[in-house]
Length: 142
Image 1 (cartoon, one colour):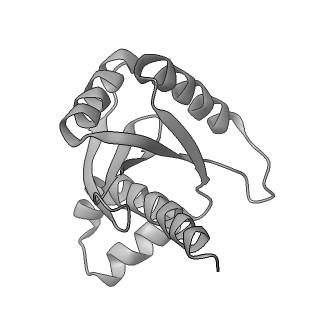
Image 2 (spheres, helix red, strand yellow; image 1 turned 45 degrees about the vertical axis):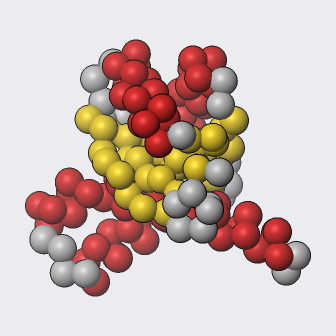
């Protein structure tokens, strides 16, 4: 089962894909947002080219767990995505994922300019890997 992870922002969408076994997440690309129909068109190409069966979208929550205005934007995006592709979509709490991605890139000695280019893709990887780890843990029964 191939799963795609998305970090949906106002300007970009970070995209990650799982390996075919659903164990590891790899960054794929950052989509520079234009219009929703164009964004969905590119995501549709990725879904088709990679045989994506399911999508995990990071849900931006406030630190107290409530949903803010950006969460509503993501919900609308998810609704349009499901309507267009009919693929199962799950959400993952993305609190602090950008902070974790930034820290990981700094520790890897990635330049500030390069970090800006890949931060959303890295965040998508963290979202998807968290989801995969939880799923694997539930399968093993621990």
